[in-house]
Length: 161
View: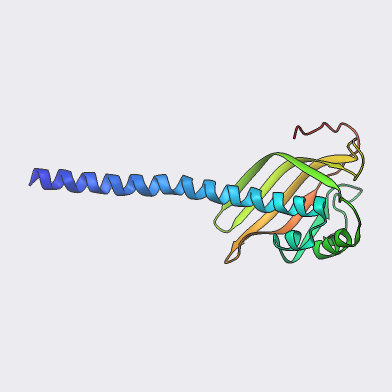
């Protein structure tokens, strides 16, 4: 009887350990998918690939600049940003992020990262700041539904590629 109890105890312990081990693996997978969605969006800006950009956002997604007299600028539809990006010629703006910090709870995630933006054909940083991407997880994966950003032109440091 004792060996039956100890086997049951071991099986329960193994089952619990398996569940606990799966949770971090799932979180790491989600974190990679979140970083990949944001990276694809920025790659789409750089290459003016509007299909790539659209594949990473939900309909109605917005960009909200943070700063100014009220603390918040007027929201812009990301669809409009995508349309303007597609109308340009040559390479798009080169926006890079560094050391993204991802937080996830259920179907909601945020990605916070320092960014730099360099204009096409230029080597100096045009502006920098922090981007905060909010994403939701749906049947189509992780998608951006809002971006908030601070922007400054001084004190910018280069991101090593």
